[in-house]
Length: 176
Image 1 (cartoon, helix red, strand yellow):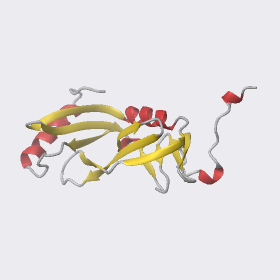
Image 2 (image 1 turned 90 degrees about the horizontal axis):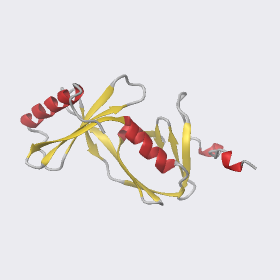
Image 3 (image 1 turned 180 degrees about the horizontal axis):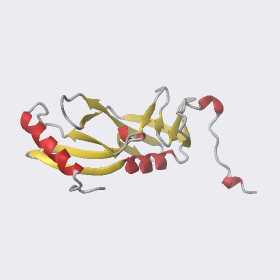
Image 4 (image 1 turned 120 degrees about the vertical axis):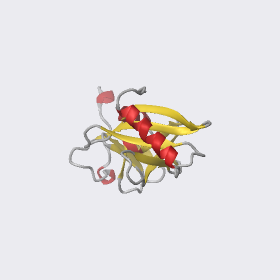
């Protein structure tokens, strides 16, 4: 009678190795026998063997059938009190039964962002400064993402970036 109140259960053989404080919030069948599992801490992707944290997702789009994810990786920078990120190639997942996965991706990625602002550095190219919430870390994790064409090896760019991050940390910057 109240079948609509039943919660979908993830098949036991598809459960990823969750952390003690991690719980499944949505899941979807993907192509083949694969599943995509959204948890309170991140997204488990088919064949990845590890979770992609919400703070590691730069962009996600949903077409009604395909979820396109753009994750980012850290670029080592000596002496900076922020992390430089660069985008990885997009990953496109066809979700056969999306359930609430696209909604959870949108909500949780947006919730991880506490601050975002874009600043020109030279001409039209610039840097995006982002403060994100990361599970298990007090305060915000400050990252920057340079636009294409910015000379990231330039000492002047490093100086300006450090000033912009300090400005954002001070609470002077806009929030989403």
